[in-house]
Image (cartoon, rainbow, N blue to C red; front, side):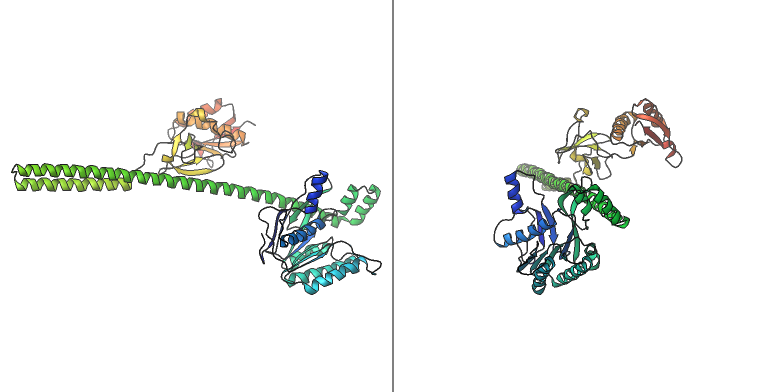
Length: 496
């Protein structure tokens, strides 16, 4: 999708030539590139190891932008959006020339100078290894000035570098963001995966080691690098790992939220259908009832006419007619009240009981009795929902193993609380709840749980404690201390 002034967004994009080469040589698959530029920031500084894929990332962005503007399909997934560029500048590779008296540095400067003179909104600037080929300190200073100028020009800019000074630009210049190519520090190999938001290390010594350089030379190099540099590299690695964990947790949270929203939507849609069907049924019942009333009225009118023919007293006939009309009004009022306030039958459900949510066709377990409005809290595979009791059907214990669509077996809990509330139950009702609760707690690794039975007469407490003494899951149990619920709570330690 191309759109003028849109952010440059690549979703799992691949370099066309790499795709062709991997298919012909039957090599491993091309690692896709996903990045975004032009929304929160307009300049991206990519750092990372040698042979890590920085230059390929630059070429992929430039080539796919030109391919798209030529009207051809780009090898990327849905979600890719590319702006329309008026100018594209790229300084990639080394154009030194003996004939033209150009050194590596001078060839880079010539290309960069041309880009600086024409850069502006609607331009794409791609600079590989900016500032190389000269004194590192001066080269880094020149590179920083170029990045600052291009960011201010409004152009979309991507530069690659090994200069440490450029890694801090994101904290000094608005509109600049860091990015890096990932490196597997355990196997000392690049993964070619782009990571946005954090700078990377060059891993020069690790790469040299992987390419077979002398251990003696590498050892001396590590001595010369110094502890401060090693500490910084280690810090960057830890930062990258933390970012990856955070991204994974964020994705998991997003997926869970989507699942909950889908379930809520499904439940809402089905509930609306149930209510519509109920309203239609009530309307039909009311219509039929009125027809009965009307038929009765016609019959009574005919009867009254017959009475009149037999010369009955007028007052008696009038009283009969008025009584009939009154009865008709009363019946209609009751029918209307029935339509508006027909109560639903609320069946009794107890915690621990197996049920099915009829509108969703999924199994669950009751975790609370119906409230004042007739709603029951039910635990399904991985969340708790609140549904009307009328939408629940009791399931026999033989169907405990019923599986949720697309989920793991119902008997494998993903989480369990640290307490089971038995208050209001008889021991016969409480026993299956205790069994299932202890099994689930063992499965998820809970070491200590609280059985709340209340104080009352103490009958339930004593039966529960005797039963716990025989349970194979229980290591020990005791009554709660004064600050733990006292005699109303039994604290159970489970076997490991």
